[in-house]
Image 1 (cartoon, rainbow, N blue to C red):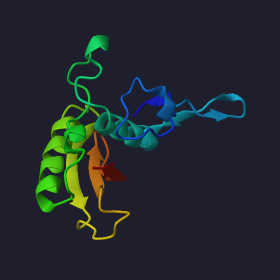
Image 2: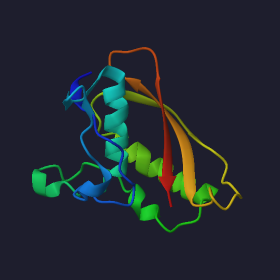
Image 3: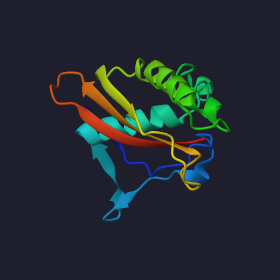
Image 4: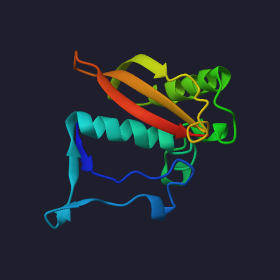
Length: 141
């Protein structure tokens, strides 16, 4: 695992270049860092919430995911199956992940406030570790 800058979360529907939704966090007057498993969790979420191809100009044409293509789709089992494909595709490029242990989607909600949000749990096995890392995510549709 490595060390990186700790970033605040940004909205899924914003481009990486939209700085309004993401910022550097500070701690005791200095830039906050994230290490180890927390760094990997942040890296996974950043990869999933960055549009594939968005960083092509910086030399990373395959970085990111295609989850943004689900915006506007209903939260159905079909959409969840497509999301699983996009997630597996994106995380296959993360060199710190040995295996995706599980992708567990919550059943689509009938509640109005959750109807357009896909909730899931991702369990991954980091390289050189035997204990899975579990990450919760909400994908706005």
